Image 1: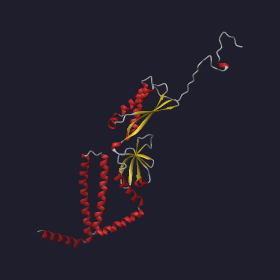
Image 2: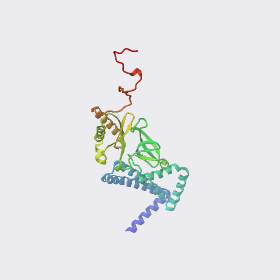
Image 3: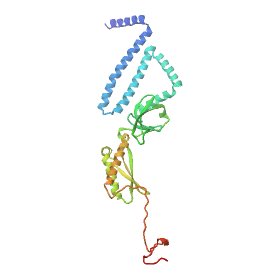
Image 4: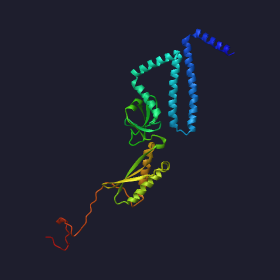
Length: 310
């Protein structure tokens, strides 16, 4: 039975080959392979997304892994098409070697970019959703492709670290030449140390000012403190008009400006309600102390009213 079926399949192949020719058969094989790869990609994509969601992976982690999975399937499809068109592994090897040589000569920067993309996918120095600084540009990673990184610009049109809604496309090749600063290298360390400097006057109650600042930060960053177990603290130093009290706390990188603004509002409100603490500001004060032993110029000496002037 099997021999009969095999003979029938062989006869069909021989008939199709005679009618269409070897080249058409290769093209049909390539199309069938591409269709099979597309179906396999769709099925595997759903399975991977489901498995990663079960393991509580973030949406950014899922997007990054699926991107890598998609490009892997694309590369596999190219290899299978070359094999189908050439008909042998030896011919495929020669074809790949020739293509690689051409790419090495004429597309050096794009090839370097692909190598940098592989480095990012394997080493994961940053991921989609991270806030990074590269080439002096600060932004949130929106997409990582084999050739470019798409950043959502932070700042740019405004001061501070608010999103400007502008996209910046950075070629991957610069990753081998430039220093990259990542605000949060993983989910476990997604918080950064931030501070709000507050100038407190010399005549303020120092202890009360310190307690007030810490209470304001604790109220705003309550959830962060519970997760990190790191309480706000104050570092102080002298300056011309008073104490420079630096209120330091853990903050979320992408919400840094928002959190600091909320803390500033709390501090202003708390200081306004107290008569024992106040803000310092540059000003001048002149104090006169009258004493019998003081050596003053004649024009400043006291003269009794009943004494006639000379």
